[in-house]
Image 1 (tube, one colour):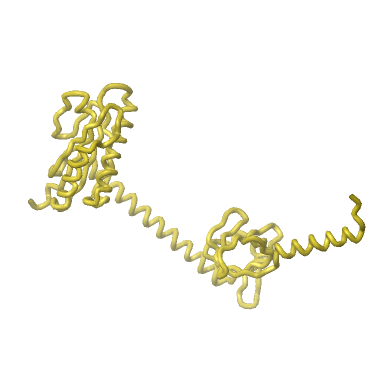
Image 2 (cartoon, rainbow, N blue to C red):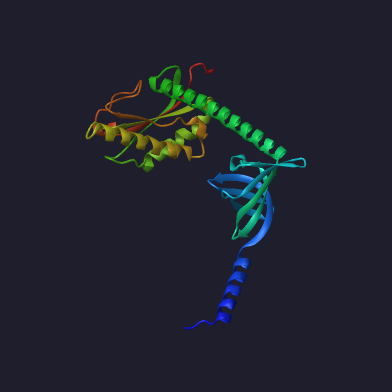
Length: 265
């Protein structure tokens, strides 16, 4: 098909019109929420916007009437920016970006404060985890704790399913647990000695986890009072517990409701 010169001109004009309709030169103001490479997730009054920079993007810091050229490292989360460029489909390809010096300082201070808060919370979490680990080990070893209630849940060969008859026993113990005051729930999983020892330890962990999940969802026990389940593997017994007389008795989870010996009787 032959295209005449007027036809080419019309096509070019239509293409330019279409491109201009899709991409519009705008100025948007918003706060940087996050960054990924040269793309910035910005929250504006008009809604979320992705601002994309390039090596040619002019970045300036405004202080009073003066402006200083900066690089992309100054664009940090929490900073209020004004970006100018072509926007299409929720993405603005920035030609210029400006921000105020005082806003940058506020963003830096906020970032430092957030980091300090995160570190402080991490330290608190680590201390709490260490205390829970020590508490769990003390209960496993039978030190300084009194057993208030106990339920032994037996499992079929290779199974981690809690059978209905044991669910009733667990619910009964869970409903009484709050009456014991400062209680904790210890959950120990065991396996019989047949098969691979490593596989048996994993199986005992899964059994203990299944019982733990059931108790946490019972509605009677505060989740924070249920200690993380422990895998005891095969051929072991808890303090004060009689050794299993058969493989059937060995495939078990031992649940104990305990309180500190220092608690008033």
